[in-house]
Image: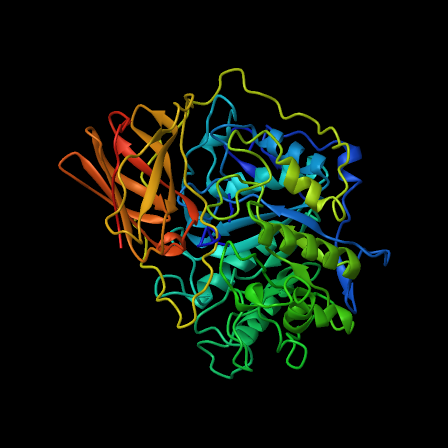
Length: 555
């Protein structure tokens, strides 16, 4: 996702100022990160390649990528989310302990060029706040390696505001996209912990497969970019997602359609490097027609086979299911996940679960909102393909004698317009919520909003859920539930001291005369009867509001 659903996604250092590649292989932050423990380093698979539909190690042994996304480096924070609450090593240790062997690390081109990240708690992550986002990426890779985790780099968005349909925008050209990939390929050329590159997240809308239009042909663009990357480092896996609209007229998830890849494959100058990567989500994310078919969930295997599973069934190419996730709150979602896990187990397809982060708007994560408590039901559902292991003990990074001061959270850049929706509704990509807290404070007891929307057959209820506050702002969420079909809704509340809303997910917000008004947007714009969404905002303020009453409207 993006956010994923946005969509939302994940999607985002250890000491002092520089993190550099040390010739010979290991990434270390200059003067700060010791070499990883041997036990962790030796557990890594090293460079991978493909044989038919199998990913293999240098010795030819089959290898299944078992990843989860830790998003945030593609958002305006330019840092993995949650570092306001937990240490980087704690998150990586949790991921490894759950049984994953890889992290999918989303980023934006905008963040690659940024001079600073934000939302990192310096008391919890000493030294990280002084690093540029690119140096932070160095450190995430180094610490992941120390925990026995490989890394897939995921170009999730061009800028940090929204998911783009195509691999380029008016501000970020195709050449910029390719040049940034070549830079990263060179930067990690000697780091075998970086096993692959996901060229562009979720092509959709006008993106086509082998249509011959150079402005829209994703297969052709992936070929150009893949060859450019392999020209710098020929040992990387080139991960290619699908498209939304397939050549037979069928539609599927953003990035999910690979029905045409068998007849028109991505063929690169270096053989045995392409891994195809669809995305798949349940009915709670978007009501695809197969969820309401009479044979559900038994019909799912045929849907997957037709769109991408045939690549493995026919031994054409490996598949990495690049995103799948759910809050696991409905019977339909539970049936979907059970069927998908069984399918992955049977086909031995690699995967990347969305997401480790709990703040993915429509899927939640593998940990609770405290970023520590495991989501046991989800992990139990994943157990057939994910065997928890004792995480290797990494060599700790030294802590500076004087912790670096934390930075003041800064407003995010002005978002670029969201791409025009396609004729067929598309599931939003999960939208990571930008959350910031230098010194997190306990969240007060949620206060329910009062009042219902006008109309006997349509309305909403809402609950205010404080997240964190600091001297210059706050983050809060709202749970909004539809009591009938809703095509438009809004929530407003008094917020004296709030001067601006710098980020919002699932809604668009404005501030006027000490009052905040938010209207449902993107993946939360329309609601089905009984549907509940969790949306939120990050605001600049001298104090956080504590609204006793929310004014609600819906139609």
